[in-house]
Image (cartoon, rainbow, N blue to C red; front, side):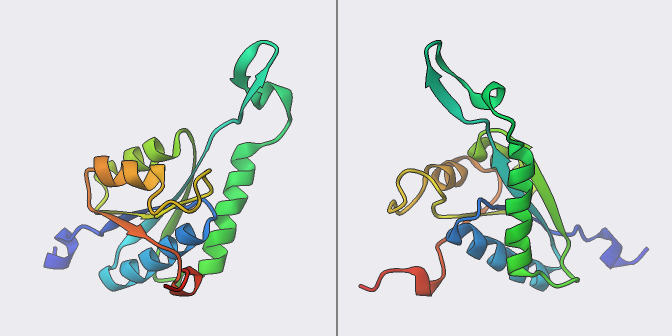
Length: 157
């Protein structure tokens, strides 16, 4: 057994939702994994939409035939294809039902690094830090890198 056999491969968890900051987060994580010999768990979380109706608030899953897990998986694959990681970097695709922040925190519980975009597709797109990235930064058990969009996406000033 060599000394390199004892070295644990770094695990990087990346939150992906299709937003420009999440694409840049995955792009950064791929470069980091290349440098460190790490692997990536690219995670997209989904939830059934909540609707209001005559019976109050409820989950819309019973009212449509949309496969949200499949749509989320396709969105994740599209981002991975866009980033085009080299063969030397292993990217595990995880499509998980649940609250995005909690899914990322749970997935990153044994990770060496969690990488998230500064904001996703939430209601407050101009916020400096989104609710998911803020919760991850506050509660993750590992270091968290919050990635902003590409420099060309940022307003001048």
